[in-house]
Image (cartoon, rainbow, N blue to C red):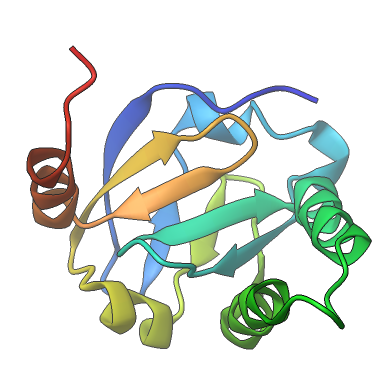
Length: 138
């Protein structure tokens, strides 16, 4: 499984579709390029997982004792409640659900970040705020 690295700017089309930049599209295993899993967790961005990475994340969470740890159960509920599977066409385009875009403040312009096992879709201004709000890497 490839990893997702770097960042790229993109534009959400009028019809709500987003084209994955080629470096991210080709980082997805060829047999998984037709469907992605989108959700939101705690940061103001949309998390994007290929199917195998989504299933791996759910396995790791379910391996923890959800019945005894209310925080794990809360995380599972939040991830699942907002999870939207989306179909991806051969050009790497997919529909970005309106409810998720509104929840994280995404408009027409986005920045897509590679986050090793997943991608993150941010409104550029939200990403700038996020970077300015915490300790820097440098």
